[in-house]
Image (cartoon, rainbow, N blue to C red; front, side, top):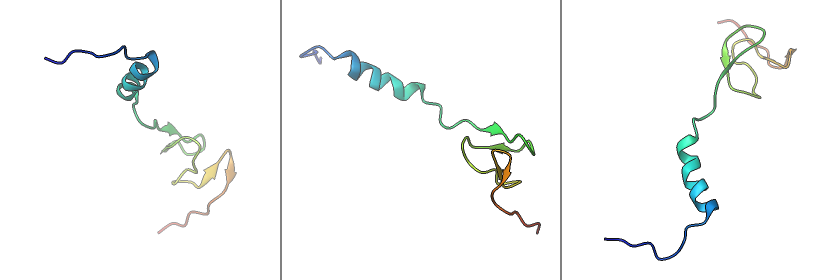
Length: 60
């Protein structure tokens, strides 16, 4: 049976537990078109970022 040799610091314990709390990048709705987009990224549906047209999207 394994026995702990020395005290594990609070930092190491919290680093290990933080991996269980990570839920990945959350998506938020685009304010102009309502499509799901990643935070701080250009919307791939309408091409807007912070209410400015950054990328031109062509219809196929």
